Length: 406
Image (cartoon, rainbow, N blue to C red; front, top):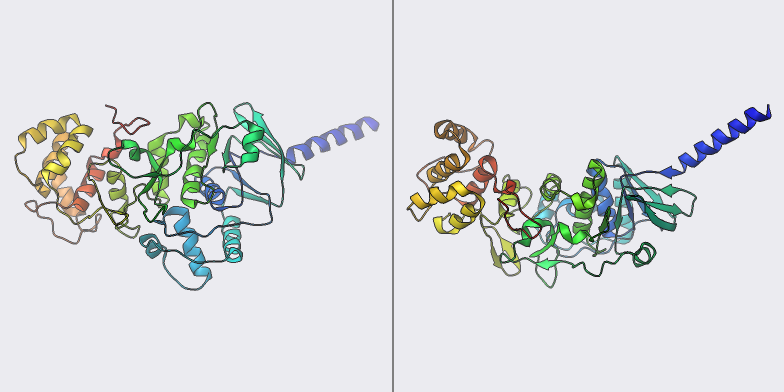
């Protein structure tokens, strides 16, 4: 009898210990802007995520006149709905405005939102008491007796954790000013924070990663939901595919963020409700069609007509065969027909069938308001859509500095 009691007790104890251990893909500590956005995005990217609030609720700082997108835009839309002002998410994304809310309202909105998200567990009013490495992952002991063993840890600039885990983040930089002269913008995963009156701000995926610190995503700006969301996507990629963070695939992470309505280029004049938003974002990120800066905003000017001079070198840089086509093309302007000819030549596509397909898509799939006319000069919007659909420069490989690799 004693033997059976012992076995039962041992089994019960083992069960209790297992029940007290959580093994999420991603673990985030913090109750502020970046932490909650990181956790929301990681969970939305289909990985098990735990968010530890060491207080009783969320503590959200005011959000300024950023170029809102992604999690931040959705949060602001939920705030507006809660306040019964009824403004749509699209109009919030299109505007660069400051949305006022109090912390109690923000806490209620985020509590309801996070409670509804699959794969997200929020632990409140619990402290971490011990933190350490565990193989390629991490181990955290909590004040309620639980143990968290995540694959990837998102550290939102927690100096106490830096000290305990011997994390040196001194080499990481914060938001940068957008500049076409520096191709690092092609590695953008967050854009649009208003700094000193401009939303022409960018953040590279590689600014989250510390050399020799695997499965750590470091967020240097705790106040930014824009940054937090991108950190969550980086962490989720490693967790989902069981990879090291040093193996992060930039293009796939950028694609994931676009799928969740996140700007990768700070175009102030192309909002999410624009039917060609995705194509303009993806092509714009390559620099094939360059935007103009005006009064602290980056403007894509989608209806502006395309000249040969502005796209010749960028497209030649992306495709070897384009060099031959442009050497033979003598016009100063690019017509719709010429763009189609270039795409078919460089992409090895049948000209006649591609043209028929394009005519069918013109007003339906692409939602263009103009008629298809091969002789008309093509607009930046139209060329972006055609390139993204038939010959996406986004798919061309780049290195960590944004330099094209061919």
